[in-house]
Amino acid sequence: CGPKKDVVPRGMLEADKFLFERGQDLLARRKWFQAREYFQQIIENYPQSTLRPESKIGLGDTYIGENTVEA
Image (tube, rainbow, N blue to C red; front, top):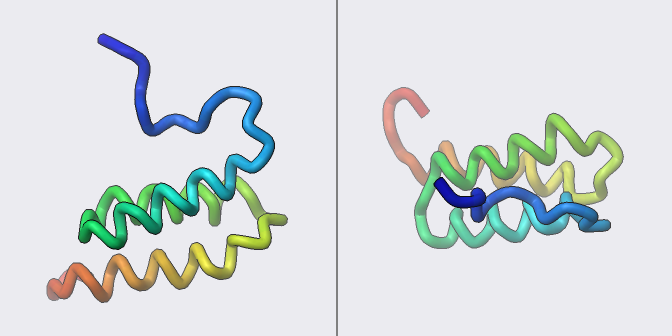
């Protein structure tokens, strides 16, 4: 029952950058589903972000890395 660790800190000016860095970190650690959630947040909630195209690539990388039939 504590605060969530993965929530963007309140008042953060570069929330999209925070989310992208978390997604990249999880991608490097092969945590496909969690990384996908961060990239998806950027794509859906930050349409003007300069990190949006890279997030779409990161999202695709999570599916490729998962290497399953469903992916």
